[in-house]
Amino acid sequence: LFKRNDGAALIYPGRTHLFLGETESLKTWAALVAIAQEIRAGNACVLFDFEDAPVIAVERLTQLGLTSTEIADGLLYVQPSTPWEPSDIYLGRKRGSRKITLAVIDSMTEAMSNEHLDPDKGTDVAWFYQKGLPAWLVAGGMALIIIDHVTKSKDRSGGRKWAIGSERKISGLTGAAFAFEVSK
Image (tube, rainbow, N blue to C red; front, side):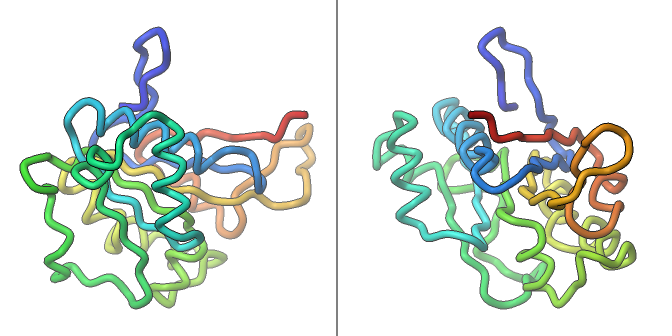
């Protein structure tokens, strides 16, 4: 999924991927491009949005060329306010006749906080990946993109910025991590 112009795919079904970067580095936009590609391909996507409002996602998907009908048929928008439970029926692996192939969690810190987990604790991050919402999504074969922010400080190896909190956010991935940077 998430194909470049040359056809090479950047994310994998059934795997957890991380888009990390500073605010305004287009992490969410990139995830929405992946969602738009999947909806155009006849699939469905689910967006767990802990940071914004539904109107923003719809407006951006419209700017990416989707019609309101395509968005309504292909996007399940969820704004959780209570911890997620595996028994939450509304989260089937289909949206109408469309298979859900991609899930996006925007963003990790808020999603973990919603589950009463601490993103600074490696054990909490490991639990989130292995037994929380990400585990359920990838077990169903969905590709998962988790959006996260980076620290404000730079490390000793030349300026690489890391995900806020535990290093398990990177080492617990089963897919790829993509770093986004603001350019002027």
